[in-house]
Length: 278
Length: 270
Ligand SMILES: Nc1ncnc2c1ncn2[C@@H]1O[C@H](COP(=O)(O)OP(=O)(O)OP(=O)(O)O)[C@@H](O)[C@H]1O
Ligand SMILES: [Mg+2]
Image (cartoon, rainbow over all chains, first blue to last red; front, side, top):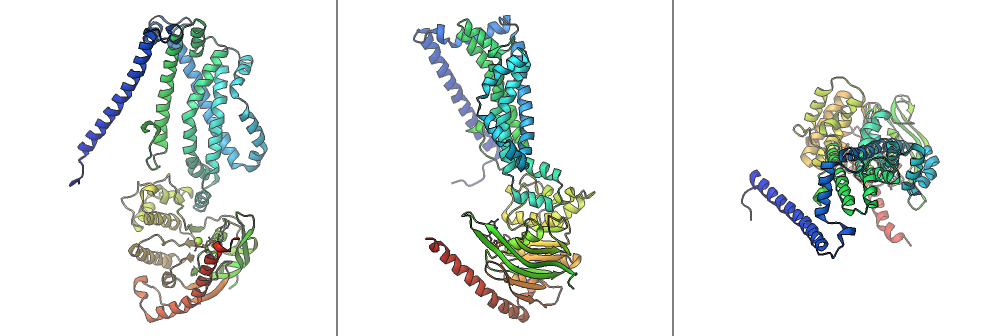
């Protein structure tokens, strides 16, 4: 039975101990996984020609960093993929929000467009990549377009749903308090749709990267997707993994930033267990 | 007299679609008038249509038949000179206490409203909680935010749907006196829904008793107790008790009827 409150120092110490424990176990798991892979590859149980091995991946990364890749500097290629994904992401998020909120607030427009939206959502959108390469060429624009299309729909649907779910009572209350149409949109509808929108943003950056990379597979002069395609053509699994590591770093940094943004925008919500604590 | 009515219900009926697709009649030929500056309490059994009557006055819903007028104008849409304290929490969860209370002045572009907002925060006893979000408040504190949010705009017609129901007895009597004081200054027209008959009598000029749903006016009592009143003291005077018993006798029948229906309803389904 506790006789006194825990001191802040004690709480902090306990939290730190807990974090250290979790992180070291996470690290331990990674070491176990990589170690097993390495041993299996060294013993030729997994053929390193097809499956690669961790040391090979590290070596590949080192070579790329020091000597560049077969298609130019590693950083240039990573940067190309990153900005294609980022442009597509922002365009998709912004237009997705605008269209989602607009259609949710405009019943007639929603009824008119509903079948078209359903149809365009049911097409596997990655195939549009081929069309975009034909239309827009091998440059970055066709990749941005594919990333945009992949991001737009989830954001659009969430913005639509979030706007629809906005509490009518709160809208009435705001109007009685003197809110104009614009005030209602900015101060009531947008904040209440925001948790839906940020939820879709978490998956969307991943989609944007998929768009950029698949676009590069289909035809490009630069980018990590092309690097992967080249490595595949040369039977170089380590090259594929090395590019995957870079992509994962990008995705995780974006996820980190989006979580930070979400925490800022939604600081009014009761604290809840976020994905990173699960 | 007729044109002087602040609020007028003329043969108002309202029906709602039920989930089963049938109609539910919430109001049937409701008729009453309220003079400008009067404080009227509406009492009636649960589910009889009190909140519905207020939403028609606020312009949030339209009557199915009949006419609702406020200050001589038929109500078609929301009017910002009407204030509404909702029965259920309608504070904005993404605004802290300060911003919630400042919402009205901000929407209305009132200049330099900071001092006004702070004075209202003090009046409802929330000084020190300005930065709390609604989920960090107790039920009673939220209710006080809602009161201040509405009263700060000095509405000429104030609709209050059980505004004190989540408050503890002490805060309730403080808020009752506070409301009295404010009303005696502003003399706005007030429609006040409550389940607490004592509260209704202590506050109001008139108590209107509604029937079990669909709501009609069952009885209309004038409360002649002298003003200014102090809700805390008035409850024990013989005049108060006399009128209380008179109204309760009328109300009790309707409450019993509503209760009987509730008991029958579940087993009534075949
Ligand atoms: N939007 C709606 N759709 C369907 N039925 C409704 C709707 N609003 C109210 N009702 C019905 O109308 C009746 C009256 O509701 P109302 O909220 O006005 O009651 P009330 O007198 O305020 O009750 P309480 O004292 O419990 O708050 C209820 O039976 C309710 O089921
Ligand atoms: Mg009600």
